[in-house]
Amino acid sequence: MAKGFRGGNMPMGNANMIKQAQKMQKEMQKIQEELDVKEYEATAGGGVVKAVVNGKKELTALTIDPEAVDPEDVEILQDMVMAAVNEALRTAEATISESMSRLTGGLNLGL
Picture (cartoon, rainbow, N blue to C red):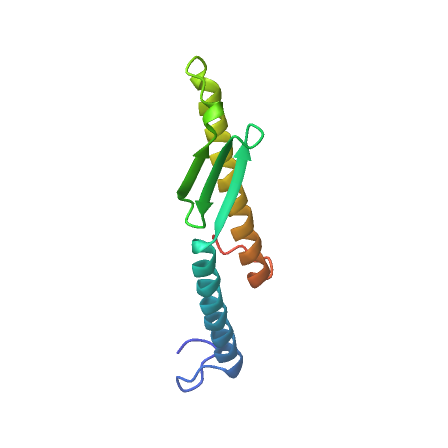
């Protein structure tokens, strides 16, 4: 018989801990679902490039001011697109991490 178990029954403290863990898991799932549909926006080049990502870290919108398109210098536009997308992804990640950390009290659960 496993130590701490009496007659196959779980000690009361363990049962409460399991209930708390299940409650936290449900709350985390709810928060994750809310964060997955939330949108995070960032701009680059003084606002000429705007990227929007969702909590699933998918690019959902990309807006480029036509004045930013210079056929002679496509590399600058490419850099601005990458900068805007990467900043939007960082914003999403930071927001998601902060929300989960508040729920878990700072425990690292590998999320």
